[in-house]
Amino acid sequence: MATLTVTINERLLLNNNDYSSKNTLSVTGVNELAKRIVNIGTDEIGLLGFGTAYNTELSKTYVAGQFDEDDVRYIRITNLDDTNHIALILKNENDDEFGVKVDKGCSFLYGVDLSGGVKDTMDSADAAGITPDSFGDLVDITCTANTAACDVEVFVASA
Image (tube, rainbow, N blue to C red):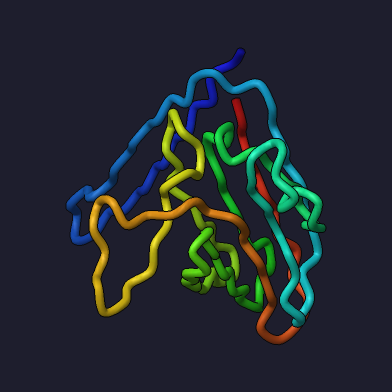
């Protein structure tokens, strides 16, 4: 088992004041890593899939891979394009969805449960609101580019 160290380092000097920040997270128990660069076109495509090891959901096709929902410990998706943005659509087991725009050169980090993977980690706002007990299991992430194809780097660490 290995430990993944994630460091977010922001540097900003504004009006001779230093507003820099550095945060480090150690993710222990990592046994598997998937790091891929995939080309995403302007049609929505399955990027990442999640399910139980014995679930038929894992038989679907995802260009960056399929993962056991209990084992995922870290997810980063980076838009490597220098011109276009991508759209990520995240869906949970209750068919709740939310989308996020990832602009050129930007990254999206998904906040997994460090001991439970992507189970009970995603909900979307509705009339009932979001409560600590309303989260469902993340089942997939789809992706589309807005104007032209984009290279996207996907980094997933699992137990």
